[in-house]
Length: 269
Length: 299
Image (cartoon, rainbow over all chains, first blue to last red; front, side):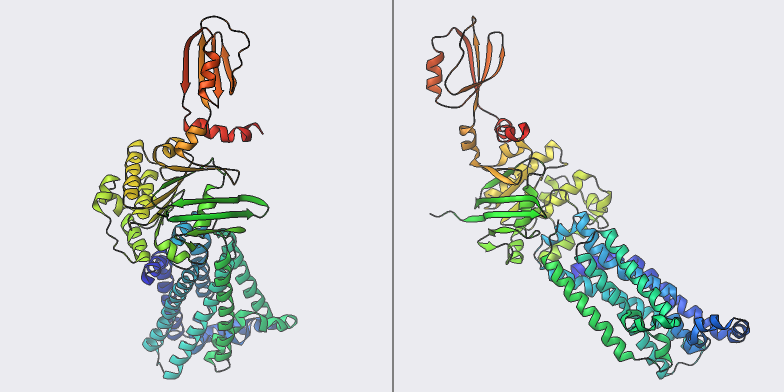
């Protein structure tokens, strides 16, 4: 198998949304940091916060107040719901399209009638997905770094932290892509695989969100993979970047190995 | 001289949950022959092909191509095979040229299509520049045929290959098949098109409900099959019963029988009767096919 042929096919199929995501996320980072640096948002928001009930303040948490600083805003930008949504769509759609939908359409039958191993196909798909997600994460990194450089003073320390957050972000979405790959290879039809993966992602995110301010759910935190993405904490030296990476990488590897095993065994109907 | 077996299938069985896909199928395909795999929709033709291509895992039994186990050596086998799937489905967002570049990359060969092949299948450069999803069904099928043939495989596996082709293109396709055979290629064709199978296949397997019910050369099949005998008498005849015949139809003095047996015996038994005409028809493949399926229809 010519490695580049399949990589090119995957890039061609996904480049539209990937380029849109890259442009959108870069501009979003740029815009957030521009807003933070060009007018005094902190005094406006402090006035609003002073009038909020105590429970709402707890709900908003320290991470929110941190966004009022430039560094905090950079970290917040990389944790913005729009960023998470766009990257989730990309991470879910790549395996669903190239496994489940291609099995349904018959394109997988055509693909597998050519001389390469099924495991090779899965590995190339996974690597392609990783590269596309890396490109989006790097776009976010570039947006943040450029904005800080343009509007403020970029230090090596801040640069390194943004790199760590971007890597952390990338690993989180590689994990989402990897378990979507697992669901797709397990034999779910296109819509089912996509919906199931989206529901799992959303449920984990919701649980993570609730566990942030509900004491009764705090025990679930170690079991929620979103807990291992901590941009604000990394930015303010309270995170565990290496531990986060190890946990996410372990889950990614488990999902990938299971996908390879399942796809090797399954029928292509 | 020993004949090289290109495909050999032994007791191949595939269950889908509790449903039979194919059961205990065994056959061999020799080098250079055009082997037809005939059966109605749902008989198990495509399942057998997918088992041969290692797309499906067998419940039991074995299949070998070029002497290699299809489950253990699929990569080596597929490098020497060309395959046209039943409902050819390419990547709709690619143009024809991009599609050929893609599959040429898979096979590490040049993506340039033989000009002669393009011309014979009436596939223009303009067609190859358009996205596949915007092409007609027939044109997409032509792209499918080219992708199966263009790396000059040793074995062609074609599942319902002429679907969507006009009669002119069908004939061109048959010529391509004969030329490939001449060049030493072995061809395995699944079809429910009787005329097509009759025209191009030298040997035939008939599948019914996932099981092989016939495996003969076309000549043997026709020789073994019942003949249709139509006898017209000049006056009414009583006790019309002849050895090896089964009365199918009777209108006035005209009788139509299905006949199987010694033709001389039959001629002797009717020689003293007042005959005006007798016609003995060789069965068409459709009649033979219907014989195999008669029981199923009556069940």
